[in-house]
Image (cartoon, rainbow, N blue to C red; front, top):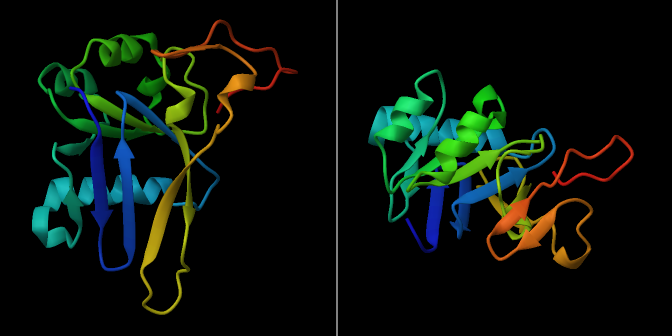
Length: 178
């Protein structure tokens, strides 16, 4: 799968809107910034359809990748955007990294952990912040922002046009990405 894909996930209280540009996008963030809520909304929309009250708009299917059957799902899927979060221990495995690199899908990985096994671009690492408040009935617009805006001074790894390749695990006194 190639190209950019605009993703909109919304209900009557929340609105996420962002573009996926590469096969691996990482979303970082502190607790209570809406990362897990995004996954939950996508899961509800996938499982319940229109009755969930959640509208997912994208030119390709957006799915949640989780659980013990993740390998089987990936082997039988093409042209999807898969969202998964750090609760799924498989995202840190070499097996998952090989599956991602051999896949015709895009992946949005929501984690606070470093993903040493995956080559991803520092230009596709984002955080979330809200432009509203959970007060009254105002809709909250979740916005993504680029975490590393100056990629010339990367603390660890090698950046090239194909992505970030972690060259080694940093020692405890080095800065880490993620």
